Length: 113
Image 1 (cartoon, rainbow, N blue to C red):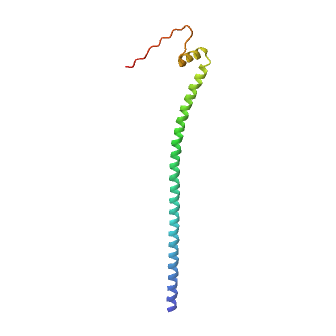
Image 2 (cartoon, rainbow, N blue to C red):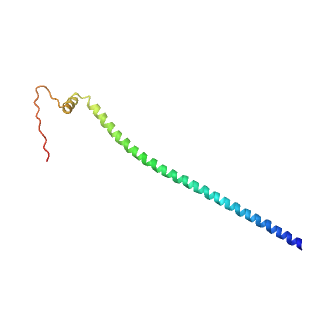
């Protein structure tokens, strides 16, 4: 009888060791999965923030591009108008305060209300 008891006690010890080892493996696996999930979450979070920053920069650059296109179109129209001699003469007279020979210029001061 003592052998039977010794054998059963030994098998209980080995079964409890296997169960303990299984629990350790499960805990280790759970910790590993949790760490991997936290790392992935942090990575996704930082990428989302970077994506938002890039979207804001893209919007600002799009606005700047629209402004530049408008200025470019205005300058193209001005270049086309400069091919007209009458327009060039008008601009020169206006910008440089020049007048033709024999022309009388009346300078009227502006009054501010």
